[in-house]
Image 1 (tube, helix red, strand yellow):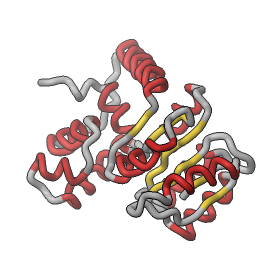
Image 2 (cartoon, one colour):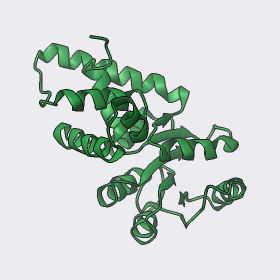
Image 3 (cartoon, rainbow, N blue to C red):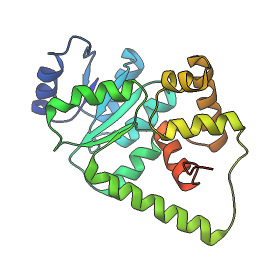
Length: 214
């Protein structure tokens, strides 16, 4: 589903995506409020969402859609390189954050990647996200307080693979467990850590240094 308040941009995406038979456009919305309503009706697999729109922003829409339909993947596709929009999008459960400077021909691959469980971010925004990681890490060190809930060894294994960008299917192959079992582990991890998306789990894993080789 395409959500953008500029009709010409929606039309451009429609033309590009319609050339890919494995991608079906199920609907379009021109503001965040309409996006929320249509998501309830159409239940899309992936939503391409602008950040700044009338009636309700893309961030507000993403938060509402993810709350009601946690399996829906949301890619923020925006001109905003404001780091606050990036952080709020991550908190709202966005699976990707791409600037509109990206070549429009790359959008189909982005949709496929996110639908397979990967998280995407424009390179120019990645440094800002990493800077936020560092700030969070410093604050944690200064407090010298570990607020980390207890995860099982298996959940920690799954979290590390999630942080590496692997899909549930890929994690299942690595750990020799069923894809549904991985999905259950991911759900339990997000609940224990009070997170809303796999991208937030990546932030947590890096902040807690779970990617270090033990």
